[in-house]
Length: 165
Image (cartoon, rainbow, N blue to C red; front, side):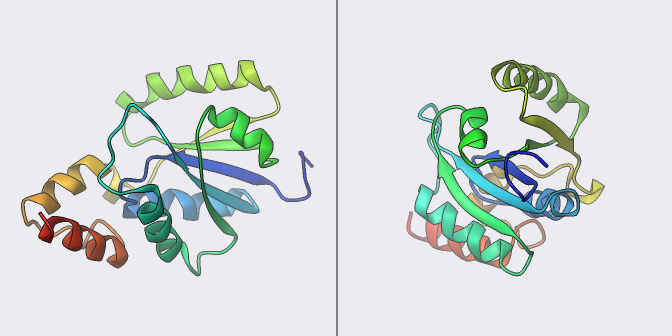
């Protein structure tokens, strides 16, 4: 077994907000691994709609009852974070072939930095391949209904965020 008794995987992302596509990847990861750490990556180059605390809350509510899922946040290199968590792998979701090139380069760099941390690519169900957080934010900002694409807690947060503007 890898670095600890549980086969732990890190699922990093901005999750601004979490979508049903993200949840689908988490469920798929739980089939392969004992524990999934959903980790919000703090990126100083991005200006998210939601604070880290809001995103942590949305994810915790959304994953409740899914199984062994931990919700956390980090800054810095994901491979370093994975090592500190005792993870054997990093999950990356691929929606389309266009996602692959950048993800592949990142996976190779991560492997170069730590050969003990693998990268596993998972595709969400085809009904979620068109989803991303940017599209969700745009639809919600224009008073569109996103309830088919995100957990109910996210709909609540989006409604509050855009009704305050």
